[in-house]
Length: 315
Image 1: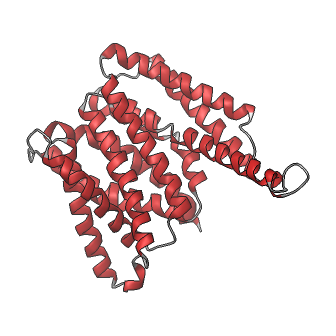
Image 2: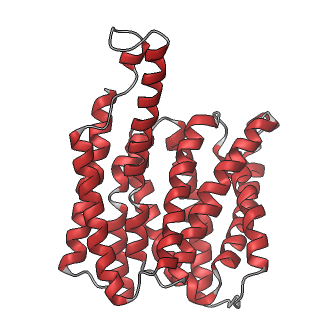
Image 3: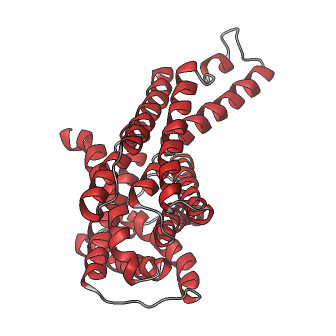
């Protein structure tokens, strides 16, 4: 169906705005305070949606194990990922740079999958598979030269952008660490969901994930310094975050992973940093110099090479 094919494109368009929304909200609220309110309001919105849909109890996870798996995904993909992004922006990192770092997710995902399948192949060979046409020969391939070239290009692109931001004082050890936490969290969360989470209604699944994220974020907000100022920019950022990013973007991400479209998501993720950088330049005046543009292009090409090479191996 055409709407299913369009899901990755719509998702990337929505996801790109998340980094810009963080810039609007951060001057008026500490990150964990904002996110705790966002999760709480999103849970309420999903519960209203569930109530209006009149779905039965069978739409909820049917075992404690699935509740636990969804909770782990929620902690990684909401509390860890969003907490890292918003804290990095609060610590002075530009929206374009945060998007670029998190946009390396497809590289990490492809490398992890290749390495994981390589281990499985070795294990299968030990029990009688291997190059003779057994199980091991069907399980996945090593990292190809094209993937290594893509990884190198992506890293060169990141270095170009980071070097520029270091000169502007936007990249520090702290905010780079926070952005790295966001990258690791969304990568691990995507892989974990694909491996462990069974098919479930997207509304109930997101509700469980958000409850787990709120349970982690609320205590952190309690100890966080700063005032929660109900500025129009903060209210707008909150409304957009709840209705568009969480109900829309997070639901699309869950559906795509559930439908086995993780590769399609990864292949389009390279568009997020350029889109975010353009939005940030337009709205906040963030510089788009030659070095930054070159870094964005190299990273996009690098991620595309890695993901397409991995997809070619699986065909």
